Amino acid sequence: MSTATDNLIASSIQESIRVKQTLLEDKHLLGQIAEVAKEFVAALSNGHKILLFGNGGSAADSQHIAAEFVGRFQMERTPLPALALTVNTSALTGIGNDYGYENLFARQIEALGLAGDVAVGISTSGKSPNVLKGLAAAKAKGLVTVALCGKFGSLMQEVSRYCLCVPSSETPRIQESHILIGHIVSQIAELQLFAK
Image 1 (cartoon, rainbow, N blue to C red):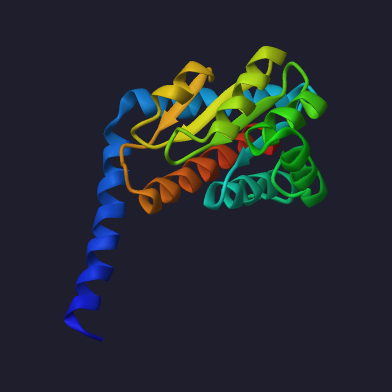
Image 2: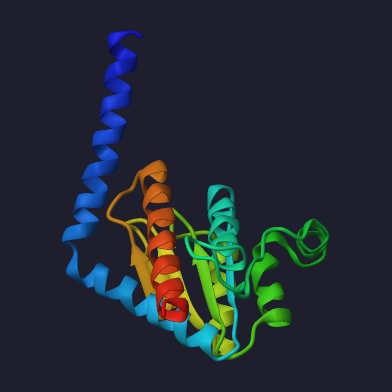
C-alpha cells in the first residue's frame, strides 16, 4: 500500500475517533440520547411504534435501526414495532410523483403515525425538506419527534423535541455517529424491556 493510502486510512479513523470523543464529552448530548432511549421504551411499552426516515445513507440508517428493533439487537426476544418509511417503492414513487418529493415522509406520517409513536428524522445536513416536513407532520399529530443531524441542525431543532446534533460537518463522520447513537438506543431499549 502507498503512503498516501496509509495516511488516508489513518486520518479517516482518527477523525472518526475525534468526533466520537467530542460526542462523549458533550454531557448535554449524552443526556439527550438517554432521554430519547426513555421515549423509545415508553412508546414500545405502551403499544406504540417507531417510524424512521431519511434520504440516501440516512435512508439506509433508518432501515438499519428499524431492523434492530424488528429483528433483534443482541438479545433473543419478541420483535418490536419499528418501520423505515423508505422501503415501500410504490408509496415513495407515487407520493413523489403526485405530491412532490418534499412530501414523501409527511404523507406517510399522516397515514401511519399516531400520538405516542416516535418519529425519527435523519439528515446529515439538517436541511432536507422532506425530513423537515416529515418531522413537522409528526409534531402536529402528537408523535415524539427526534432529529439526528450534524452540527448545522438549527432547522431540525424547530420541528423536533430532541435534536441530536453530531459535532461534525463531514457526512461520513456524522453517519458513523448516527448509527452509533441508533445502536446505543437499541441496546438501552432492549435491556430495559427484556432484561430480567
